[in-house]
Image (cartoon, rainbow, N blue to C red; front, side, top):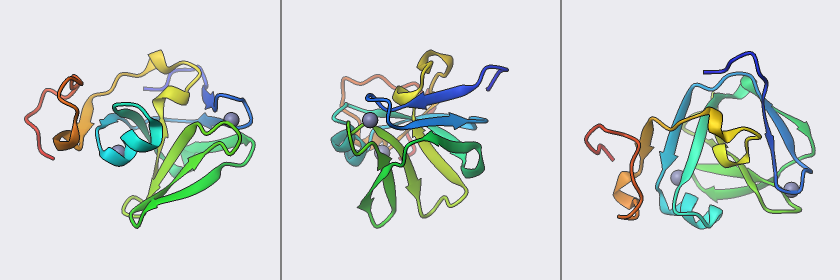
Length: 130
Ligand SMILES: [Zn+2]
Ligand SMILES: [Zn+2]
């Protein structure tokens, strides 16, 4: 999915900046934790291998959001940046909304569809599986 252009992003205030070398998957998450933490009806995540994601400026604050994983956010402005799940030690999920050019990616998958708000459309055309 990545072209020759660098994939970069950061938080609202600019304290945190990051670079992504390659995106493997783009998914909408409808789970109630993502909804509450972001304040948005759903969160679109880029699935990235851990070695392909680097902070280039600043140090994130961490929140252990459940026993399943933790989230990185900016301590100054609160922007959610990343989520690391214990079950996926090789990958990190990065918020599409924090990209400099979020229009470069389109979600192909919806997860936690059972928690989806009924008025939120799905990108995923397959039958719901979870
Ligand atoms: Zn910030
Ligand atoms: Zn979620």
